[in-house]
Length: 217
Length: 217
DNA sequence: CTGGTAAGGTAACGTGTATTACCCGTCAAG
DNA sequence: CTTGACGGGTAATACACGTTACCTTACCAG
Image (cartoon, rainbow over all chains, first blue to last red; front, side):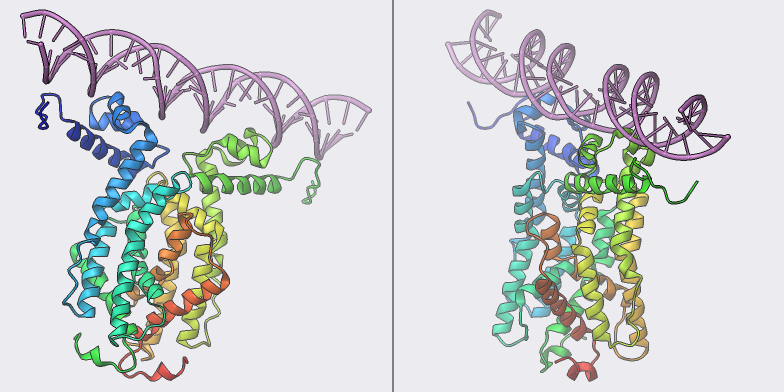
């Protein structure tokens, strides 16, 4: 049996992808409990049997969907090329990355759907938090600590500061989008929000000797 | 008919309150779609008929629950006695108020349950946002603007800054609690988080002439 | 005390849904 | 071309839930 499965019948992977695509539409729109397997099938084509063969159950499908959506949306957090930059540059880059991630349809959907189900899927909630907001905060805390070690900033609790920074990007703008009260922001709006947040955060970080002040205009 | 309804049969108000109490437990724990009317009755006593007489439908019950929970938790936002205080004092007080509100069981529950239902209850979502995070941001923006007018701070976009401030109090700590990954923070943790957030926010706000610097220790 | 009214309780109804038993077409080997 | 087996489609099953029809009981006017 060749590993390359050419087939008239759609390949296993494409079936799986189509189901996950359809599942994203309905689960992320209606929530886990209100979504029926039939509704997924209506959009993906194929049959319920395929879903049960591939994912085992409704829970399995939801778990796989959330897990993969989060992984995809959050994978950008791994690729950090922040080495040679200034602290302001790092924060701006990090902020843009964060805000774009948080505003991506995949993560918005994960947010919407995981909240009431966190009790039913504790491991999923834990994984999501640690891979996303938790990791973002960890990485930023490291950056801040090394900056503190170099004497660039003065900060008592780098971890708390990192949490606050991350929180600024899940503020009212994010909430409005998650609640469906407004469409995702344009690139210009994203950029403005990032610059504003970084400005506030940065100028509160610099110590009393304000050497870095002239750098930003 | 006397207004004081002494009754062997529990008064209408107490029945209503008992139902809402029970509804809060199950809706906020399981989410709207996964909650059955029977589950509410099991905890409140009484009968389904009572619920349908009082609230009309499952949707009506949920709407009333979210609406009243939000009103109760958010009523503290109206009572502002921030007049004579310094900007730092105002922000600290406002921060404590915000964080305690966001961590209250009622608002945590509203958060959990309204997210995936925002599409189904657009008005409820809008009301919630405007009465809560939106209003908080509005009020803070006013405070910031008047401070700017007095020359205390230099800030381009007070509205954006207010959103960021509010966002810091819905950061990773809040998310962990909403996802059930940790219990609500103690008073000491709340105080530490507030001081940290206000510190970052404030020292980023003060203009180049850093007159207010000596005030806070 | 008595009758009338409205609210509370019970049980049924119809619907929707997760899951599975069964059957058919398709694909690879011989 | 034939054959055997496996994945995919259909329909049935068992169940849970929102809602309501009907009955019972508690309250109040006279």
